[in-house]
Each structure stands twice: as C-alpha cells, then as structure tokens.
Amino acid sequence: MKNIPEIIEYESLEKVNSIFINDYYQAFEQVLQSGWYILGKQVADFEQAFAQYCGTKHSIGVASGLDAIILSLKALDLPKNAEVIVPSNTYIASILGIINAGYKPVLVEPAINTYNIDPVKIEAAITSKTKAILPVHLYGKMCDMTNINLLAKKCELKVIEDCAQAHGAQHYKKKAGSWGDAGAFSFYPTKNLGALGDGGAITTNNDELADKLIYLRNYGSKKKYENKYVGFNSRLDELQAAFLIKKLTRLDNINNHKRSLAQIYFDKIDSRFIKPSRQTENYDVFHIFNIRCNKRDLLKKYLLEKGIKTEIHYPIPPHKQTGYKKLLGSKKFPLSEEIHATTLSLPISRFHTSEQVNYVANCINEFE
Ligand SMILES: *Cc1c(COP(=O)(O)O)cnc(C)c1O
Image (tube, rainbow, N blue to C red):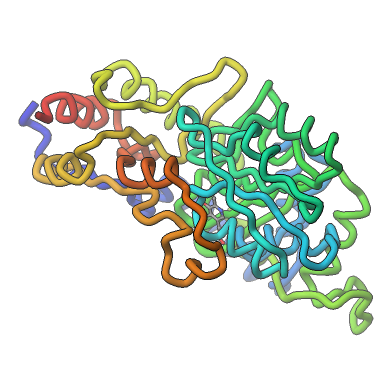
C-alpha cells in the first residue's frame, strides 16, 4: 500500500469545482450580460429549483447559512426572551444564529450513537419560555424528525432545521428542510451544495412565512422605498445563484459519490474504531465521515505521516469557547466533550477516488 505517492488532501475546492468550469463560465457570462446583479432571474430560478429539490413550496435565498437561521427565527416572531433548544455539539453558527436573533440558546446533548440532538433530552429541557427547537442534521445525517415534530406539536414549539450539512439528506424519504416550519441552508463553498462564495437559503411550506422572509432579507421591503418591516440586507448574490443552479443538477451525483466512499469506510475500517451509525429510515449524505478513537490526536498525526490529511469537527465544544462561556452558563455537557475529544473526519470529497479511500482505511487499520 506504499504506492500512493501523492498527499491525500482532506478537501480541495478547486478539484471539486473543476467539473463545473464550463457551466460556471457560462453562468458568469449570463449574469454579466443581463446587467442585473441583485435579486434577478438567477435568484428566482434557483429558489424555484431548490424548493422543488427539497420538496417544499418555497425557498428564499439569503446571504449565508447563519443569516438563514437568524431570518427564520426573526420571521417566526417569537416572544422576547424566548428559549430555543439547540444541540450542544453543533457548529457555532447554530448557536450564534439564536443569539443574533435576540433569543436564548438552550443547549441539549446529542445521542451518542447518531451525534444528533436527542428528543428525550429535548423534552427534559423544555420550560415555559421554550418557543422553538433548532435541530441540526450534523455530518449529513438527519435528526429524529419524527419524534422532534411530535414533541414540537405537543408543546406548541416551532421547528427550524439547520440543514447546512444535509443538502439532499432524507428521513423516511422526505428531505432535510421539509420537516420543520423552516429549513436553514448554507452554500458555503465546502458544503455538499457549495457556491463560490457565501450564500444561504430558507425552505418552508408556510406561505405567510415565505412572504415575510422576502421582505426581511431586503430591508423589510418588497416594493422599492416602501418598508413594511425592520429588515436586513441579506440577499443571495445573483452570481452565486447562477453557479448554484448549475451545481444543483449534480447534487445527487455528489451525494452518491460521497455515499459510495462512505460504504468503503464502513466495509473496511476495523470495529475498534467507532464508525457512524446507520438507520434504515435515514438517507445520509456524509458532509463529514467521522470515526471516533481514544487516541485521536496520535491517529491524526500518524495519518499525516502516511500523507493523509484529516480534520476535526469540532476540536472545542461551544460551551468551552472563550466568547460563549458566560452566555452558555456553567452546565456540563459530557457527551459533547467526549465527541469533541475523540472525533476525526476522514477525506470524503467529490474528487476522492475509491483507491484513495481504500488506502486511508488500510492505514487506519494498521494504526497501533
Ligand atoms: C456551515 C454551517 C452553518 C453556517 O453557514 P454559513 O453559510 O457559513 O453562515 C450553520 N450551521 C452548520 C451546522 C454549519 O455547518
């Protein structure tokens, strides 16, 4: 297995996007020549295509995944001081979105097998101030939306799905973004559906919510110089939308490729490493493929010596981040800490080959 000379990158956006080069040049030319660069035909066309892809009535383009969370929460008009339940092991943006919308994040631990928020623990965290749940479909696996939605209905809570890592993921054949009151997507370049810059979208089946979001993202205005709401400047860029239209046609292909690489990891990697769980009801899209190992840092170093680059999602849990310690209180989150201390993300990008992934798996198995 020593005959793989080149470095195996964790990710290379240049390589991921190389198959779209001609499409992108064409998209750029179309936008340039249209003379219309903000909220034009490309954004409208992408919104329609993305809503259709997700199986929702609407999708509204915004400037980023973080803004998708903030605007969804703002549009739902929760009462002041509302508490929003969010997983303790998520990427910081899920929590920051709640804070920037003016609400209080309440952290709840994940289930250790799925790494996704645990509905039983959600129920235990609900107070009279709880108004919404923000489940995060981490690593490309959907949360237990069946039970989360049952709980939300019973307790009259809103549900905003953080779909930033789950474009095309499914739970009982229904896509991420179509389960909650709203779904917040990011098109940050590394995501499964990544643009060539920042971008985001909100999916919803609620006509009223969609209408309000169209105002909120554009200064609270739908008609020039008339401001119905106090809004934001958070528009999906016309050029990014044009690129995304092209890439969306290949999203299933990207996800299938990642799934086939994941299958190699599942088949090959020793059971002494903890691999992701799989459920028959979930269709996972492996934004990230992680394994867990007590000697994680040594394993990472060993793999690098073998020419394999890996990442950690994430090295420090939110409640231990300097900027958030005060805000998040002094509660303990042992499962999150366990995950953060032991998780390692393996190469699983659109450009990786099965040979490369076999090599990675073999090297892992040879780790002492
Ligand atoms: C990437 C990400 C976001 C934020 O997306 P941006 O477009 O970078 O603002 C939010 N939540 C999760 C889980 C993410 O992975």
